[in-house]
Image 1 (cartoon, rainbow, N blue to C red):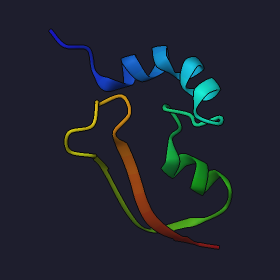
Image 2 (image 1 turned 90 degrees about the horizontal axis):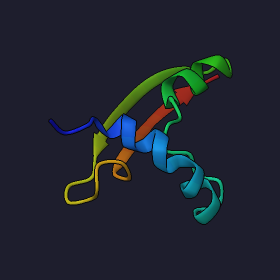
Image 3 (image 1 turned 180 degrees about the vertical axis):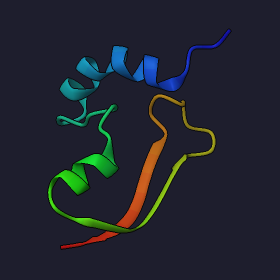
Image 4 (image 1 turned 60 degrees about the vertical axis):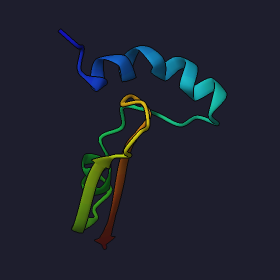
Length: 65
């Protein structure tokens, strides 16, 4: 059985933050936006083809105040 990407992301995040300028692998992007008072008007979340799953998660979208 293969562990889901989220599990690996939690394990790798401390190292990732050190080597990638504070980049977090486990941030919940939609929650961060809505908690900041923004309304998400479009959001596409996917994994980059060929990228290792723990590092390939991408969020692209728009939000309004």
